[in-house]
Length: 353
Image (cartoon, rainbow, N blue to C red; front, side, top):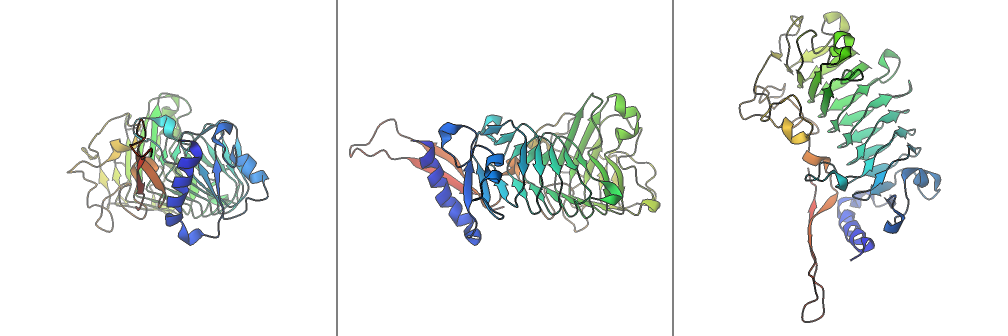
């Protein structure tokens, strides 16, 4: 059985999930020329006049691209997810920078390195980001960062840019003993930071400076229903803008350290047994499932749970893209049956949540 056969079968199933987007063209991307994909990388797709705004680019499972990628059209790029079993080689992995230079780009189901955002109204959803997400220009308003696993920092442009960002239902994991381990969320104005899990452990040199905060220099924003855990010492508050003059709403969070929060009584502090697998090093998403008696359960503003598993965009293990079918298993007989037919059994699951 060859790659084209399996892709054809998957495209047939994808047609069910994307019937409402029938007008969009779909393209396949794989850097390995032997895969006979439409394009070897996103740069090639952007250079091709056949690819237009609204098109969908599907990354092959196991495809690795090591060259910097620049996206200049309002396309959706879809990968197979991440932490797929224990085999990271099954991801679609961009090991170099990605530059978003058009409005309306969406990335989902990918494993990326650092992403630089130059325009407004982009969406990064259900991705594994091993690097940072950086607003690189002042015209980067209304960006949505949701349901991702991020081993890095989300960095805005402060008052002069990056307004109206939605940072929702992410797991932000920062762990190390290095000088470049900075605050997970930094430099935003008028942002919504809701239902995230922020896990920050840093015993490096910068811990003694202003980088010890989990949320740093965020103003005029809403910070609600989060799990914010700092695992090294108690020198800093987890949020450095926790005074009324910063014009933030800080409510119904479970925070690891309490000081100077008298203006925000509707939070929980110094809670234990938050996660079922409480640990300093928690590099995979399953470690963030709530304990049965977690203080985060039922504490959200709407009576639901704090953290990434509840809220507007509940986190999905492995970041499987919404409404995209995937192969659960494929059984290929070693030889044909008595009629000479090779009967292949495929189990395909549509991600419906």
